[in-house]
Image (spheres, rainbow, N blue to C red):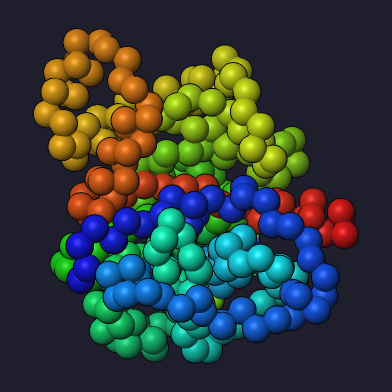
Length: 285
Ligand SMILES: Nc1nc2c(ncn2[C@@H]2O[C@H](COP(=O)(O)OP(=O)(O)O)[C@@H](O)[C@H]2O)c(=O)[nH]1
Ligand SMILES: [Mg+2]
C-alpha cells in the first residue's frame, strides 16, 4: 500500500453543488480517466456497504461533482452486477473510485480485491442496519490497516435516524466519529450540515451561519469525543495538555490532524451524505 492514502474529504460531501449541463455532455463517457502522472499519485478508493445502501448513487455523484460536464444519473439505478471504476482528479492525485455490487456472493472476491485499495468508504443507510457481510469487510480492512470513512445515506427517509446509526456503527465497527451532522427540514429532507470541528451551520450552497442554540446542543453531544479522538492521533503531543487545560484549539489545526488521523487508520470519520441537491436540481432543470 502506498504511504498516506490521503483520502480527500470532498469525497463524501455531496453538498457540493453539481452544475447542470447539456445532455450531450452528460452522456459523454465518464470512464475516460485522466492520465495519472505516476503511481505515487494514484489512490484506489473502494465503496463498500450493504446492497441498496447508496454506493452507486454516491459513486455517480462523486464522479459528477469532479467531472466538468457530467451530471449524475437521475432516478433508479439498475442494480450493478459488476465493479465500476472511474477516475477523478483531486489535489494533484488521481483517485480511482471503485463501486462494488452488494451481493453476498461477491464478498469473497471483494475481500481479495480490498487489498489493492488504499482506502475504503463504507456506505451505510441511516434507515437500515449494517449487514454481516459489511461487518466482515470492515474486519478485513482492520486486519490490513486500511483507512476507512463512513458515509451515512438515506437520512431523508422518514425512518432514518442519524444518532441511532452512529450508535450502530460504534457497536458493529468499534469506533466512529461524526465530523458533520445533518440538518433536516420539517419534511426530513437534508438541507445542510453542522460542522463539529469549526462549529458552524452550512446550507447546500456553501453559505455559513452561526448554529442556533438547539444546534449547539447537538454539536456538544459529539464534539468532545471527536476532539479527543483527533488529539489522540495527532503528532502534536502538546495538544492534549492544552485541550485539558481548557484551551480552545485551532479548528484549522484539528482539520489537518483529522486527515493525518484518517490515514493512520485509527480514526473513522462519519459523514452524512444527501441526494437533496439532486431533487432541487431536478426542479431547477
Ligand atoms: N431517499 C434516498 N434514497 C437514496 C439515497 N441514496 C440512494 N438512494 C436510493 O436507494 C436505492 C439504492 O441505491 P444504490 O446507489 O443503487 O445502492 P447500492 O446497492 O449501494 O449501489 C436507489 O433507488 C437510490 O436512488 C438517499 O440518500 N436517500
Ligand atoms: Mg450499486
